[in-house]
Length: 167
Image (cartoon, rainbow, N blue to C red):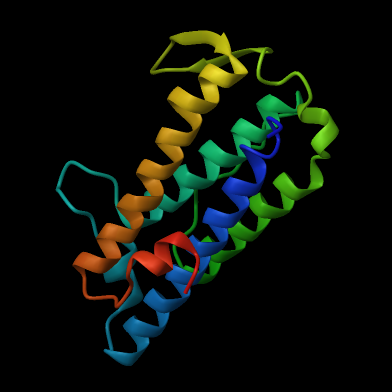
């Protein structure tokens, strides 16, 4: 399996599933007469990020990882989404950005040095493979599953097949 095959298609597939979960959440809010802001601002714990930020971070970890792997400019997004529609547009934009990067640009990415932030004023440099395995994928899936859990906890009827994108 190529480095590309182990990263970009995985991000695209999971972001697509996340988009479908958000569609179910929006329909649930409408059906149950719940203000969408209630779900968009919901969190599992008072110290955790709300749903909106979970989606933004899932998009950031996937889009920026692919940019780093392909040595292209890191995408910058304003993090100003406040509606389901705006979050859907963000996901679509990130998927489009990832799809626009040709697989050939990933060649050698597993050995390429990747420098990324790990807090305020601190960076770490690792190989692309280490970055994928120990930073990009774990963070991406953490935020995707947390978004799923927030919605599930709030009554949205989603299951494992929705998360896996096979429903």
